[in-house]
Length: 397
Ligand SMILES: C[S@@+](CC[C@H](N)C(=O)[O-])C[C@H]1O[C@@H](n2cnc3c(N)ncnc32)[C@H](O)[C@@H]1O
Image (cartoon, rainbow, N blue to C red):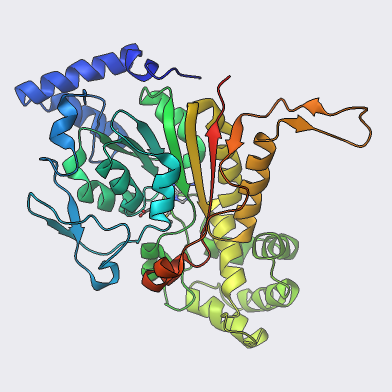
C-alpha cells in the first residue's frame, strides 16, 4: 500500500482517468464524469486530471470559483473563503472549521500534494487546503454534508472529489477510486454545527426532534432504538463507557420505567426525563453525557476512529502527515495513546532485560501536547473550546 511520490499518477487506473479528464476538458465531454458521479452518488468528481499546467486554472485566485458564506455566524471566520475575484456563490452557514491555521501548519498543503479529508462536513478545512493548491479527496457519511460541501466547492471540481462513506472504510473507498498514497490526512471528528442546530437530526437536548442521532441517515440503528430496546445492563454500560455519566444507574432506571408506558421517541422527552431524575447542579445540562453516550453508540464513533488510526500509516507516503481533531476526552485518549505508541521507537517492559525496537513505530510526533484554540478563535467560535489537535509525520521505511 506504500506509495512513492510519483506512484499515485503512475497507477494505470489513474492514468486512464488522467487522460479521460484531459480529453473531457478539451472536448467538453462529460459522459464519463457522470458515470463515476453516479457510482459515488455525489456531485463532484474528480481532480485526477489536473496536470501541473492545468492546475493554474484551478488556483485559489484563478478561474476556479471560491465560495463566500453569507451568514453572520461565519463573518470573519478563520476558515472564511476570503474575497472572491470571480463572483461569489452564497452558501448558508453550516459549520465553522476549528484550528484551521494549525491544521494548515501540520498538513502543509501545496500544489501537487494529495490530501484526504475524512470528515468533509461543511467543507471549511477542505476549502482552505484547496486554496493552498492541494488536491483533496474527501469523505463524509452524511449526505447533507456531501451535498452542501460539493456545492460550496464546485469551482474546484478538477482537484476535489467528495465520496460518501465512513472514514473507517477509507481504504476500500480510496482503493476503488484508484488512490494509492497520500501526502496528508485529516479527520475532524464528531458532529458538525449543522447536526446540533438541526432539530430534525435529533442530536440536541435543547431542540425537540426525533431521537435519531445518525450521521449517516441510512445507518441501521437510531438513538431511539437503543433507548427503547437495549436491556438495563447494556444501557448502563453505554452511559458509563461513552458518557462517563456518574448517574448512569439512576438515568437508566428512569428510562426503563418510562418506556414500559410508551416508547421514548423525541429528544426533549428524554432530556426532560433526565432533568427530572438528575437536577441541574452545574452549567451543564443534566442530559449532556447521556446524549454524548447515545451518539457515540449510534454512530460507533470510537470503533470507527480506532479502525481509521490503524489503517492510516499504510496510506501515508514517507513525510506525509496526519492531523486529528477530537472534541472530548474519550476520543482524545484513543488518538493520544495510538499516536504515541506508533511514534515510540523503543518499547520497554520491567520483565525484559533490555528495551526492544517497537515494530509499530511508523510516525514522528509533531508535538507531545495537543494544540488548542487560541483566545482569538474562541471569541469567534466558542464551539472550538473543547477541540484538541494532534499531528504526526510518517517516517520513511
Ligand atoms: C466536525 S464536522 C467536520 C467539519 C469540517 N472539518 C469543516 O471544516 O466543515 C464532522 C463531520 O464528519 C462527519 N463524520 C463524523 N464521523 C464520521 C465517520 N466516521 N465517517 C465519515 N464522516 C464522519 C460528520 O458527518 C460531519 O459532517
